[in-house]
Length: 107
Image (cartoon, rainbow, N blue to C red; front, side, top):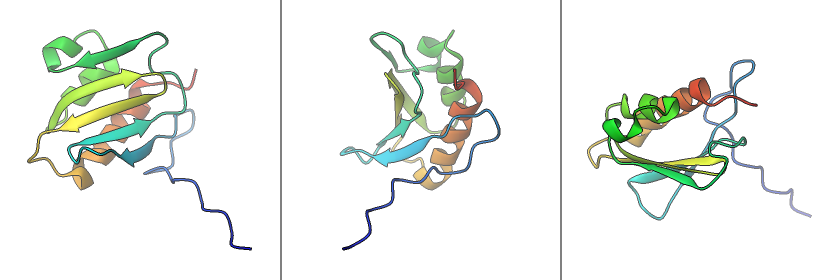
């Protein structure tokens, strides 16, 4: 029998006490899903389309501080980030993972 497929690997191993973040493609090439494995929103969802809208949410503020982030959607245990079309996922995704690991705790 063929071995079972391995689960998606995190971008980087988290520092002690930090969450693991898994990055997934979406049908939209300008959006990626960042699964955190812990609740990021306990009820409903949050949508931020600017740094001003993100004010007061530490994780969203940190994401908008990154060059290339256009919008942030948070629900349940994941964050979806839409990039500016000129942004490079290879550079932006690891920065998003680091920001989420810093601002979302494993409660």
